[in-house]
Image (cartoon, rainbow, N blue to C red; front, side, top):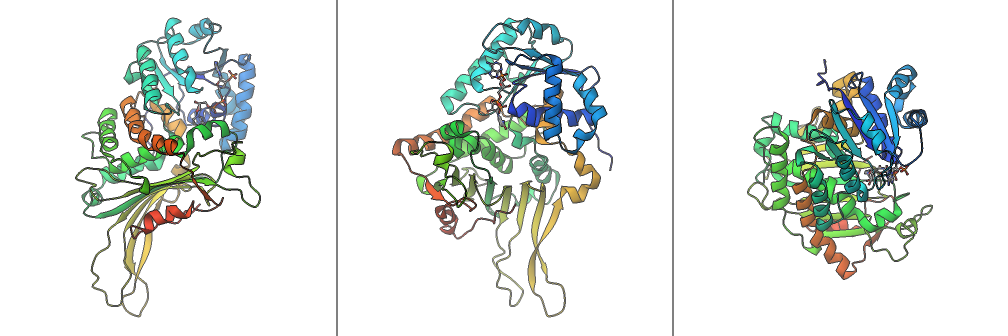
Length: 484
Ligand code: NAP
């Protein structure tokens, strides 16, 4: 199979927060892989920027260590790594100060693609945007990449959008949600809109319900203070899960183009019905035999923040009327797994004697682990003895189907950064989408904060609180098993 890669033009990429965790763990190792794939034209440069007083060599050393630690197998390619490191530079800059900006202005070339990655706390986004302009660095063609969290409610997200809009046009702003960079998520669109098979069934006539699960085995280690102010709803649902829901539920866009796709996603968010409290379960992980409780992890013995949430949502439009969308996400769960499952209706009548089972087709889209898609279909159990039916998966695990090419599938961050360089905003959230998502989640969060709603405790290593099971049992359904 010959992979076709769209070439990229020469670029200068400035990473504010270039010494931080995200830059070292994801952004730079990802860029190194893109370099190995031939996607970094020779005169392109990556400039780290942060307050730490480092010179270019010190920064290269830091990134060499980061690539060795987080870069996977590719990091053993020392010759290539050396060439990659030569393309790095560093400027000591304080987002809130004046020092360093003149040095940066000298390094960034106005005649190549300029991208500025704001991998710093959101409270610094406004300072960076302003100083890039007052120091004459950004042009009308520059792009900025902003990280999550994008606000903590509608008011703060709106204020952040307004601040960025003072200096940059919406076409220049790339709000990153790395879930959208995952191969399977894009494949979801390919499956839906590139095959004749699925779209005719993609509605309330044939779909019984949809489940979206994002479960993690880790707790809040290291991010306790931030997480305790956010919780699963703000940290995961408002962005990642809602983005996945949009891609599953949206109408086919007229073309595969950034605004056409984002217009359709926005319509889904706007059609989400308010949720009744009976249809939300909030949980908090308890202490285990050898692990601390959530409250101990965040050092807040009176915390009411949820580390787990499950909910039943409805989309008020013709396609989805009456089809529940069950969403759940949590920490310290039994396995690390992200999956979207489209559960089709059962047949209602069987022509096969002795077949009492209710067979269902289920399309399962796995984001992690083992990215892939499988379709559960019913077939005859092999062998003699009559017509016994069994359910088997038609497995489309990419690693198997694509052979060696699957290893070259870029990870979410590297793909998204290359999209920034190419100027493709399709997989980035638009400002109005983010605000619409907060407009839907705000009343729910305000409701439980006002009531001092106490989350249900759940055992670490479980599938969440018992009430989450009941959410589906009450509807005569059950959650799919969480498999790592
Ligand atoms: P971090 O490890 O705390 O790094 C923060 C970076 O910002 C450091 O390079 C720091 O370097 C720099 N910095 C701090 N204050 C600065 C200032 N006044 N001027 C210039 N630079 C400054 O944070 P992180 O985990 O990398 O996260 C960065 C952003 O990505 C945050 O918005 C976070 O929410 C988001 N994010 C992170 C992850 C993740 O996995 N880490 C995942 C999703 C989103 P100096 O101290 O040298 O200035």
